[in-house]
Length: 111
Length: 111
Image (cartoon, rainbow over all chains, first blue to last red; front, side, top):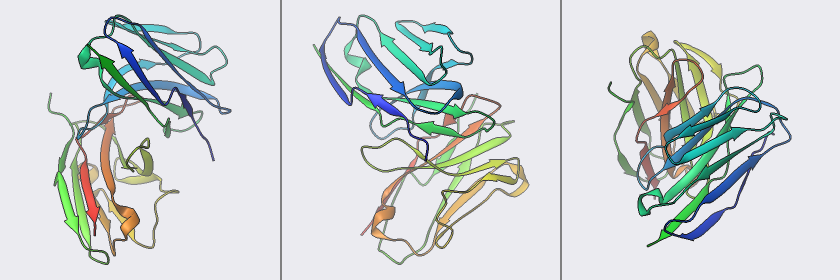
């Protein structure tokens, strides 16, 4: 079945550092969504990407839709303690409304 | 705008018992999804509705899981009988088109 490889699995960084994570697949996607999930809560949508090569920002977050349509990355600049959580990518398969989720990147920020 | 509502937030049952979860999507969202999220993993799609019709239920264990979305609004997901491996968070999401918005989830523990 379709899979999304998300890396890194976890990150420990110092407050103020920049963070980068990515998702790759052998499948082609129409749309990429990036989510953050806090403990005990549902995922919260951070950024949506709709076409290959698109670069979109939301405050300190920047995400890009890979030109091959098989990958996407998320950058967080100048991390702060509230950035702690699990980040998921989700890709919408071509020709469907179905999303495949990555395995998540667990981010911990050391003050 | 009210978000996706789910209840209950937590449920503990014994194996072989039955359980039901309820979801009220964001008003006007035609598409509704149920996901299963096992600890440490990304959400896995169980079933997708477009209005009150099923679009994708290929990963729903139909021998024990069932879902319905009467009148194209609220939805219920039922497990009967539950197994130990059903312990997970069950997330409901709704979508107006491409973006998905999640509820807080129901954490199910099967003893």
